[in-house]
Image 1: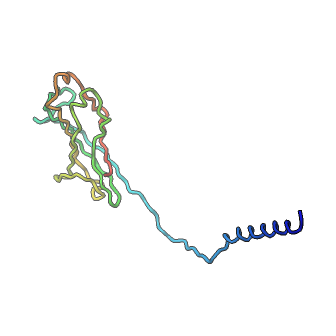
Image 2: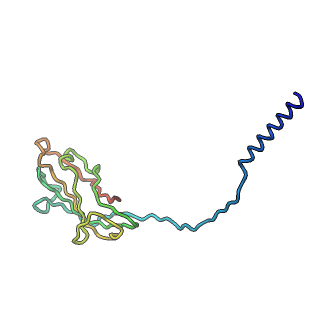
Image 3: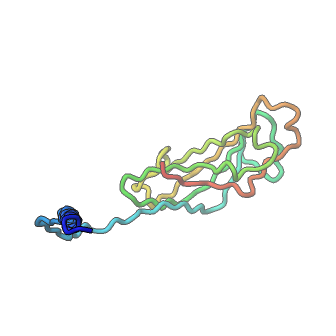
Length: 167
């Protein structure tokens, strides 16, 4: 290689090194640590208490011996203590549909849940209800349109689960 070629290669390499170094040129900067505080999550709990009861449209029943017929409305009643802490918290009590099993489940449809705190009906639980005692009613309506195939069928509520879910 001649001197001119070697010089040109060296000059080109120097130019590439200078161009590459241009990207690392730093300007002044500063940073400041801030005391941003702590983010803390609230709570949402449900604890049933007392002895639940059952009734139909005519009054109290013993669910263990009651034989339902189409058109019956069977109501499960219980009380629950609410644990609800959290700004902007809104929740409601529902029934986990997977906790109901059996071949009569379809004829009972989706259970309707209602709540009362004292004598006041409520649809939403908020942090104002923390430690409140809530009267919960779960109504199962045996479909009037059920045919003869529903006779002697059962729906197991042995694992009936109430859920307090944030909305």
